[in-house]
Image 1 (cartoon, rainbow, N blue to C red):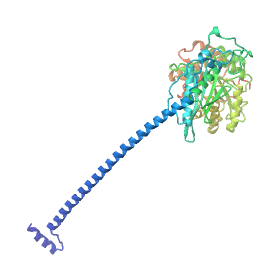
Image 2 (image 1 turned 90 degrees about the vertical axis):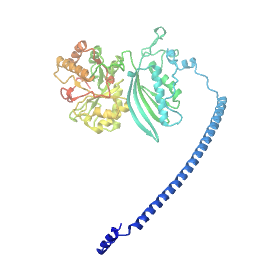
Image 3 (image 1 turned 45 degrees about the vertical axis):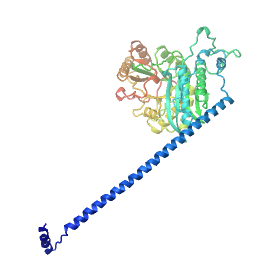
Image 4 (image 1 turned 135 degrees about the vertical axis):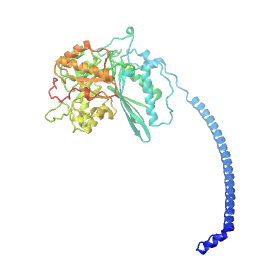
Length: 516
């Protein structure tokens, strides 16, 4: 390093001073060693502290577990002794005997064998004991399910209308609305008692049975027993054609029910055949038209104008023949006030309460109606606020929906689905083309093609003479591989409408073959 002093002198002469390298390097090396030793000492101290804390935590945890196990064992012992004491003070009631089951049956009833079937004592599909509204509603669900299983009701007889998400404080539950079509009671003819004109068995005291018919009574009785077993806090309230279920003062279920005949159609759940529905609108003004439709022996959905002169008779005759019944609600048109849909017209300016009053009145004139369609209504079905109010009324009335699409921009179907209602839209109108039998037959063939292509189709028509003649001819030559079904058996979640399916836009027609 002899060259370094000479270099330092030359640089110093020019004003650049270099430090002596040896002392600087020595100081740097010693500092590094001391820092390393200090870090090692701190690490060892931290490790020792961590080990001590870990050892202490393990001892505390072991002690806590031993304490919990001792407490649990003591609690189980106390609970067992308390249970034995309660059983000694309050013995279990004797099981229900067959005589007590018979005592709930109406006089003259022959439902004893069916009602004695053992209740399915299954374990609840959830943990009970919290006492919340959520669990109470689930208990009612389970009791209702057990009733359906016990009575062996087919899936096609139960139609879920809405399932609304609700909250009550911190509890979450669903308000469910459904419609149940009850089957006739199958009895041994040798044991069948004589019947009155209403189909009920006479009693020994009065000669008549007061109350619901046997299918309805059978369902209510089975449901009451299931509620006693699985949801004993539920409150069941019955009114004509409807029952409600509530718990903890909160409504959880609304069920509309009706007794059906042997002609009631049920589609097997596994049936994948194409489905076609024919809805005949504007009925109720002519009994001869009703007789002609029933004589076809085809599943046809009857859509009845509520204030037509023979509305009630038409709906009753259709129901007794096993046909589906809708109420054809008059609605405001684009040409209003110059063109009216008829008595009981629902308008866009009406409040929800006014709509409800009109709907209740209409249902009183159309017994057995399970759904609603729109008669005219090009203005109302394109008004969002009015359509939503109308769909809310339908939900509370237990009805499903058919959108006749009287206007290209109708939103009735979309709003009904938004509300959660089962809803459908028509694909074809048989009265749109020339008013000839051949034109209607061509439309029916097109409906069959749509059903084969999409798996489903809904067509509507009015009972003009050429339409009835075409239906009679078509019934003999139609494709039997296509299922002709009521509207309620059409798929709900899939679209039932496409623009290319409509040959021309259906206009509101102020003239009608029905007398209002």
